[in-house]
Length: 506
Image (cartoon, rainbow, N blue to C red):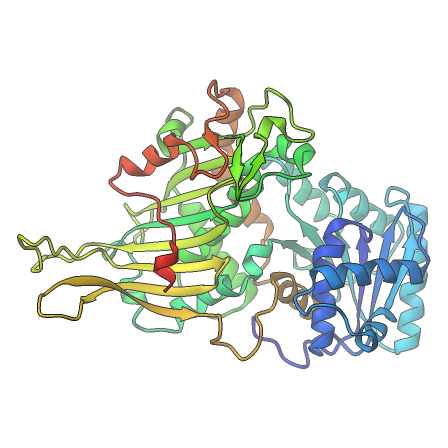
């Protein structure tokens, strides 16, 4: 979202619970460092990392420097730049379960306020396991830490609950301590450059709105595939599955961005109202109909890039007879005037043929095909393909005449490709989101009713899959495009899953 210098001038204090964890090292600190390099952080800021490990400030900063050197998009840190940035970082050993140990945070906040002679924004970042979220919030309250509704924020990472009941309970507990405008439920997909560009592409171009409806669009596909397996996340993933891990948040948020009505402005609640309206309009899934609109899979062993990889059930911390799905495909309908009858197909999975995030909008066939002949010159349907990763770009696939004496058609791509088109490197998603948090912009963050509506939508599928075991798991090999039942799900409607091949990119 647009920023102004005034929004970025207020001092800020980040208190990172889980300050020695993987998320802090891989995402949070590299993002803050890159914002610092680009002069996007306030002049006065502080980062207080906390954890149970024993670190001096110097040792903690050195561990973060190693992380920045490895994970920052700007490469290895220059000594001078890192010294200036790191001088704002301190470490506090603390047990997040013990409210008494939070008093030191209050002392540090008071000292910085006195030093800066200004009231800073206080940002509590919960980079911890979900079971500690309420503990942290309650201990902030018990310790009477800074909690001004206008300047205090708390960041919650996904998963936000494990089902509808737990999400409602978590929202209820958090809202007894914080106001909704203080809670930032972070979904990093919404911070990605191309995802933000969907809004601009749709609403800043007059040619798109007349086409963006059931009269011209035949179906929509949202596909997020990963070549990697679950790695070291077996303990978490085997209790979650891909439906909770990806569909309930990332994919449904992408669907809302595509399907939402035009907001009157970019006020956070105006935009989020539009997204909630989409979720509320989506056709409810009946328990007895789950198998007709959803397919699941679990990967087996195979070969990826010349290396043998284990099946899901052989992964670390995974039950040997696990029924957890590593692949999910679903068909949704948005029952409103714009989208009535247009299917939205979602798929996501691990250990698939390639890592890719694509949104494909397929337009209807031309009403009269004047090009069909004995030579078989049949025009293909137009597609709008939004590529989020690994390549960022938006391409409109149209038909044109192939040079020559015959009327032969060929697909032509009109491409907006981020590579080489921008003078500056695109920021990482966490950079965008952290900057929005500092400035108090909630547009890209999920509201309580949005989270609960998403859970409500998928609960029939979740309940059905958990109570009905799959006898044929694993049902797709590593390095494939997934199980056959997922192909059948879309094929029965006369469509096929779309992927962007190397030829499409040229």
